[in-house]
Image 1 (tube, one colour):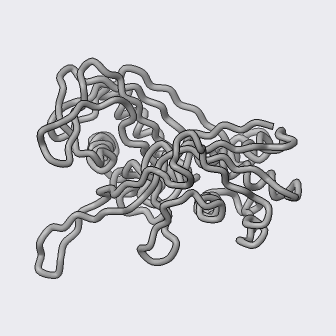
Image 2: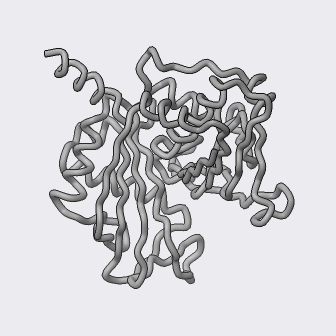
Image 3: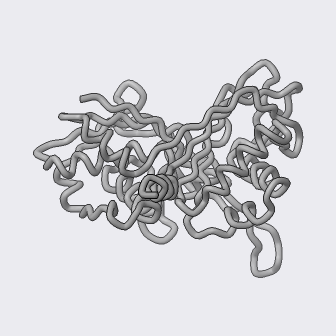
Length: 296
């Protein structure tokens, strides 16, 4: 009986990630900000399988679904603000589910993308699922993994526009150590078991963590910046308006200086967690996808 209880508790704190490879039989156009239409298409997949789950993702405060949007090589387009999905190219799509109450989301994605249709329907074409891999971990396992590094150096690749709100609607266009790890901290504390919540202060993070953007990819400290369509709303007159967020992409390394072991472990755990959660806002709509490499 004890083992059953432990298994249930472990399952309740699982972090899930899905990696898809997608192809198109025919080339077709998509908006430059493809995360938003992909998000809508995923809701369509879920709605077909589990309508309540689709509504749960759309209305949930945590934003339990993280989607990378499409990652790959696109062709040009004569249509303004559009690019072309090529029939000779394979595209990657990464999905993450971090809310412990959203196991149904993960199961519905598996059912909808693998067991049911094997396709994602966009407005001007269809992507076929060529491969599907899933992985899972827990917050506790990430802490244990982080503890294996004696002197960690964290390299983060911000693969899709990363939109981190500083205050109100103001976003940062630089991967500042506190901005990045404070965003991840908020997602961690909302999704982890109570006993694993973290309490990091801005003072200690800024005093002990150093960000080092890749000089080979940037002109000094100038990163690639983007304006991304993440939603649509209505004006007071009832007209539809596009809602944009500003963000950055690129690679940045984070190192430690005179940091306590507990701080190193916490920050490294958050970095590993980011591959499941994404970082910043609009992560369900293709923003804030991370690739993380740790040495040490």
